[in-house]
Image 1 (spheres, rainbow, N blue to C red):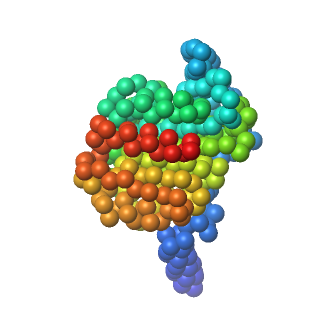
Image 2 (image 1 turned 90 degrees about the vertical axis):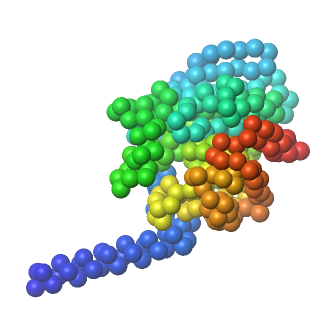
Image 3 (image 1 turned 90 degrees about the horizontal axis):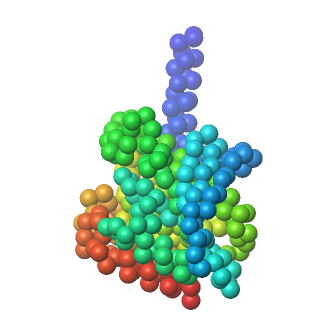
Length: 298
C-alpha cells in the first residue's frame, strides 16, 4: 500500500511538472514563477556609496558600490551630464561575456565609448556595472571562460545564477538611480552587447519603465526551459522602442533563432538590422546604434 501511494504521488509530481513546463514555455507572462527568478527585495538596505571620480563643465563621473539583496558586493560607474535644460534621462549599458563595464568607457573593438558619449550628449545619465564573475567581481577562481563552459554543460547552474544575479543587480541599481537622480516620467534605455544583450532583454521584460531597448547580437539559449532564455520572457516587452542588431553568420544565434526571439517581442515599435558578419559586428556597426539614439530624441 505504501509503495502504491508513493507511485501515485510520484506520478502526480511528474504530471504537474510537465504541465507547468509546457505552460511556462507557451505562456510565460501568465506565470509568476518567471518573475520570481528576477525579483528583488526593495526593503533591503543596499548601502549605496557614490564617489566622485572626475568632473568637468559637461559631465560628473562617479564610482558606485552597493550590496545586492543576496549580500553580493557590486561595483559600477555613473556618469551624469550637467547643465541640461530638458529633463534627465537614464541609460543602462550591459557588457559582453569576458569583458567588464569598461567596455562602455574606453575605445575598444566594439566602440563602446562612442555609444556612452553619444548618450551623455543626448541628456542621458549612463550607468554601468561589472556583471557577476567579471571585472572586479571574479570569484572562486572561476572567470568568464569557465562560465561559457558551464553554460554548455549538464550543470549550468553557475551560469544561470550569474545571469539572473546580474539582472537583479541592475534592477536594484535602476531603482536607486530613479530616486537619486529624481527621475520621473522620463526615458530609460537599456543597451547591451552579446551576454549584455541577453541580459538587457531579460531586464526590459521585468522593468516596464524601460521604454527604449537596443541589443547587439544577443546569444540564443537552446535549452527549452532555461530561466535565462530571452524568448521565454520578451513577450512582456510590449511598449518599448526596440532594435536588435543581428549578425547573419553569428555562431551563437542562427538567423532563425534571431527571428524567433524577435517575433516573440510584443511591442510594435521594433526593428531588426542585419549585418553580414559573425558575432563581432563590423567596425561601423555603431553608426546604426547612434542613429537609433538620435531617433529616440526626435
